[in-house]
Image 1 (cartoon, rainbow, N blue to C red):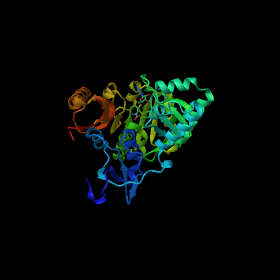
Image 2 (cartoon, helix red, strand yellow):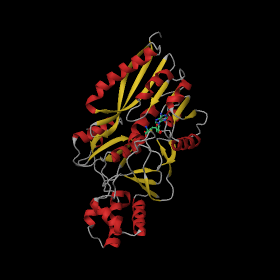
Image 3 (cartoon, helix red, strand yellow):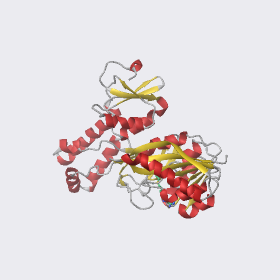
Image 4 (cartoon, protein in one colour):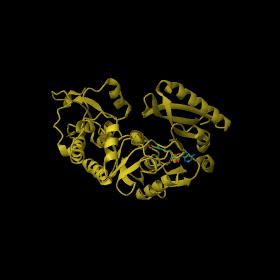
Length: 390
Ligand SMILES: C[S@@+](CC[C@H](N)C(=O)[O-])C[C@H]1O[C@@H](n2cnc3c(N)ncnc32)[C@H](O)[C@@H]1O
């Protein structure tokens, strides 16, 4: 605890540097740790964000894994004004809609089932899967006319200060990991927004964007890559490609992507961020195209879940004979993380030897990005391959 900013109060909070405030706010909201009833406080160059009361140690442990530098403190907050509190706005406006539509029948139950979190891409609000799909809500919405349902989506959009509304469906199990977002209110699924200073654009009803990988995009963009040639084997709309080209200052990024919808977003963002000379898009299956950049890269990013293993052998060959870095994404059972790390390094050594690379292969860092499911973590292993001859 840091006493220098604490006041006698019983509200737990986190304090962070002002410039990381927005990312931390998003992350706290995502993990349901943020207390929306209190107004965040700015003190000189730091931001203090209120935490929900009664959080358990294991919930708070997530904070440590977020790789933000934060301090847990006690702080006195002012009550958030209604206009600053989207949860309260949502409750109030949906209650009004219920009063008009169904004379307020079941109002309390239905209001208690309102979504507690959502994501925002530019002016589009994306509700979680199953929002408004409880038995009570389904029954009511089935009875409503089209215009009544539209009025509900419009009032939710307004309450959450957006212009369009969508609902997340599970990511498709196809090779593209396509988005199944359903547009509820608004005309088009195209969204544009800024993520850590990088501009993104894509059709949210066609491709996925995982806001849970926010901390990893920030971390990758903080790694200096000046003068490096980088291969991004699964570029998508540029989740990592753009951060590596713009923030890490890579000299050139070769971005491999097979989904035409993702490529549309990637090409839009390359223009918007003025990166035309720094990124080459390779449209097609990376299994066929990666050989075109063998022995050219200083770094290879392998961002596919649940596993990118089928590109490891290519990645080894994409690195220059002198070696380089690999960033390997994987979904791993929490209890198996250490054995997975060891097995992965052994596999990479075998592949490197098979391709005549005389390297020392080691990993000093494994990033725990997010919980994929209750016992499975999305992790990223940073692997350094160094020539033994050097
Ligand atoms: C799920 S996305 C990456 C998501 C990203 N890591 C994030 O943070 O949100 C993975 C991308 O890899 C692409 N992909 C999968 N297999 C591929 C292959 N063999 N060749 C090229 N692209 C591929 C998919 O189309 C998809 O756009």
